Image 1 (spheres, rainbow, N blue to C red):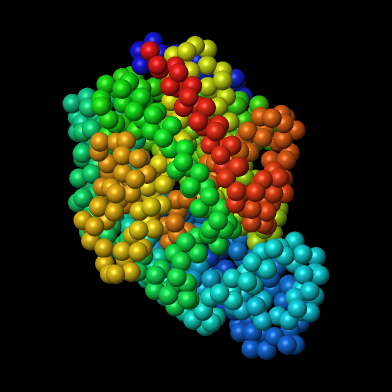
Image 2: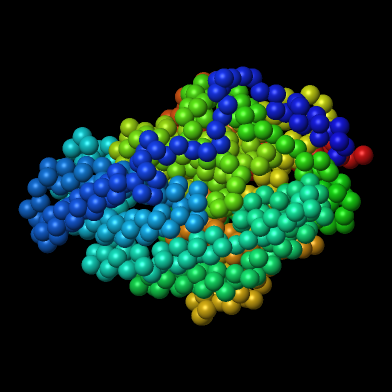
Length: 618
């Protein structure tokens, strides 16, 4: 790409309408004080955790008595207990979200780490309490069940109660499940904490302007998309070495996480490794298989894109660190204020409510975006259901990808905003539909940018950035899914060594990218946090589901125009109250177990590739 093209991107793509307060420059650090003042020393936080623990204990004692004989259960009292349970759920989520923000903003905050351990222990007690509730639900006669759902507050969460009732019947006896939850705090979840601690010690040397800096994992990862191929290759070599140095720690954590899950599944009588993640995401194996099968059939067109990009970069094949690289030698830098204003302006073209939410997030300092050492890598959006606020975490370095990430996380926040006011159980939407909302928001920004490009050079740059997300969801995420599935098969035979993990990872990447690259990322299994998240197994395929589901929704929105914004909110509001198959049928009239919907969604992204190939055919 020419310098002129890059200048066009700088000055035309980010042509914000002024929608934020011009007299109030945006802060790049978040405000946590109005949640729990005092940070990791907050007395209010400690008091809240103590009260939650007491409430859990009191409810647990009640449930122990109730569960012994449900034949004479007082349904109104049990209904009131479930309402109280949901209120405690919100308060515990509030505290855990706050602690998560503390540990993310400063990986060296020892007090926050201790609070994280404390909240884990309380969460284990809460999980055991939930198990007892589910035990009672499973024991109810049909007559008692009908009486329970006749209560107004219970009718609001009927789907969720029935889901819990059925799931309880597939697990171990309640006493054993409670023991598993109690032991998980210092066992299962402890391995995830060990990984986080390991990441906090990763340092990657980087020389700039004659000075060598020690970058954190998050900062170093941003350099992997540097416009200079020499910089990317040097950083990637150091990146791989950094994770090689930590591979024993990461391997230990991953093996024990996997071993715990396999042993628990074995005791429950589950022989299908995807059973739990599919249940959590409220989707069927048929839907998952149909989605991947349809993607695989369409990959040749995306291999054409990778090959064309290699030609444009002047190489025979792309390396791993070229896949997300910009097509040019100049760094495109977008200020935080410009990125924010662009996002709000584009959101407003779809939904006034969505744009207003984003303005609120920026104006009230809900976003931690500062590029500094000591932060954990990655990005997230977390919700505070009591305060009805959200907080967004990322490291903003001024790249177009950073703008996309910011839009993505604001999409998560808007999803939660739509859910505010619902009972806690009816707010428990799964990762796949959460990623639908975030990816939809990201798509609004990227698609509008391409359509509004003022010249061919700008349009090509923006189109390439947009296609790179398709590559990530169809190939990178697929590689993660293949790796994790095969890792569990290997783990059944015993501990999987770092060398074996590297081999499994490269094989999965080669298959997912259809052999289109000349080098891969062997230690991706060590560098990617998602493999170590204990609350959600298989933290991968829901991303691709969300991407394609949102693409299909976006296509529908384009067809229907402004009136679709209300339908979109209604769809989001239902995301925790039905399966994804039911959700698609109710709001879109689509059958997700058939390839038609997936193919139409993929066709939207194929058109991007065809346009890119046409524009670069000279």
